[in-house]
Image (tube, rainbow, N blue to C red):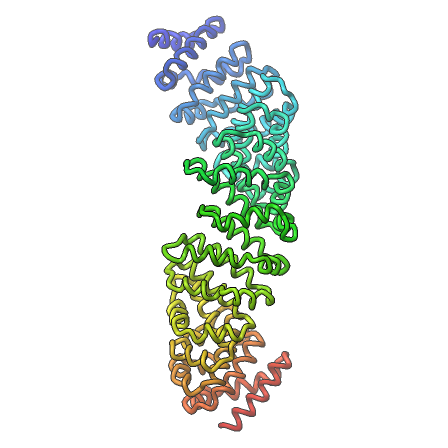
Length: 604
């Protein structure tokens, strides 16, 4: 075999056109026998340099020459030499041929040279090869002839290798309009497994690009994918479709199209088939299906369509996941409720139909060494359900705060964050609940600890906000005392310097209540945390919002009864800053400035 190969290579270098075909046959035979070794010899003997001339001749040997290049380019070490030998321009020229065999072998050659090769892709890009291939696919899309199906598969594979993991080349294909063409292929050639798979892989690559979503949304991709999904039996095929559905379903228009096409029913069926299995592939499929279900509910229209006023069969099925023994389903069920709970109407209906109890039972199952993702999801759902005012008292009566407090010992920041948000939402406007929680020394102690969680800004911010909320909503001396004793005052003073105006304001109102209800107790902490300097800075800062200036002046008036704080106010010449605010464009600020100035003058 080796002798024959060497002879063929020598003959090819010297040969006349007559003997070329025999040499090419010998090369193809040798490549089929040992591709790597033969490719190495072809490179060694400089045969690649002869290929452009052989390709340009365009005769009966042309398909064999292209076939040899396709075989050689299966080896990574041969791709750059193929480009360097100048093979790309003549190969791209061959794409204009009418001969199907030439097109097939040329498509293979270009596709293999582009595989994982930057040089190959750049050369094909420079020669305009992708545009010609895209036009071929478009013109051949409707043909159901088996030979055409094979050619389309090769061409789709070539475009995939050309653009894989390369955003700019993928964007180029999108501009060329390949997406509608590929979606059409999926519809016409759904019986052709190889072509269908190639389309799916191409979709998976292109769907990651944001610019592709609009084009996908203008096609019937949702119907085609759902139709294809329904036909699949094998796990691998379903996974391939899932890999396309997940990035597409991030787009709200496509979410609704997928719901209309019946994807949800397919997903529920997958869940039903896999829920009791412990086979790895079934566990993976259950996760993918339930995750995708939750993703569909992130779109407002698709979510509302599936909610159906709380009577929808899909909504009911998803609710049944919460009490399940499967952690993945518990998680998906809780996340689904959190997603359904995105408007007041849905929240009110869900609380009235007993969903809170299901979530509390779920949380109770995860208190000791529980699943953190399930805890996080269930707390998210409770937080959302607590937003409408009418739900708060009902949820408090159902014992939500007691169950949530069981997670105070959690060391997981995502759980801490949701726990804090849920409690803050629950006590909003609920004075009794705020007083009950605000006098809970263990809770206040934990909040003060989390106010120092510098590694977790979200937890730190939420702890400060809850501390402030307990005071603001209870307006209770006992709560104020508990917060002072727990060391919370300094954190509220720091919160007043936050970059978020809403947090600044919440802090100032809470500090004002502390000063009004228990100034004697708080005096020492106010001095130690430089409250007066903070207020001076807020009033001087021209960027401070009107409500910040207003609440700062209210607080100054409240602390004047303390001798050390009064002295600090005098030493910082507050009266100059305050008198300047009497001409503030906001009438409320201007009026409060006059009152504050009178107070400062009277007590100076």
